[in-house]
Length: 222
Image (cartoon, rainbow, N blue to C red; front, side):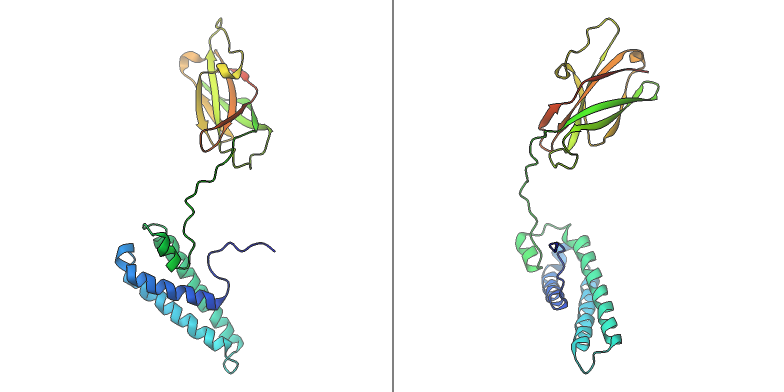
């Protein structure tokens, strides 16, 4: 069975307990959090309607298919409003951990999770885009794009004129840019047309750590 990850409780009694805590907490911090009073009033009305509908649906003498359907409708309206309030107001103001606990929510996790050192290798495939432009397609030689260490790509390149000494290895490349796209673009000056560009790529994680070099390729600049 998959683990439930939604912050909203599954049981209706628990939802009512949460919304009651919300109403008390919002009442205390209405001005500080910038929540309009009309939002609090609407939430209170929806909570009261949901509690009444649940009592009716649970009571053997009043439980009917209509009462059950009405209970579902009221809770759907209540939870939709709760989700909207959380998204609209709770994520914007500077709530403290104790505020989140009072609301029955988990405080945000501010602990940085290291993404690890990249180990994948990328090769480059170039293709013609237009005058003074080459497209670059990044293809995994090893490793997986789903590895969290593979945050983005550092594309290294150097332009070499006829008669100049070309780079012997990727470490000799001098210019670079970072991208998170597997298809990107190299743009060149008009004067560089007819020269040769050498390109190689390294995976780069969120902390700027770079992985092993991929193979160096070259292409004629159109």
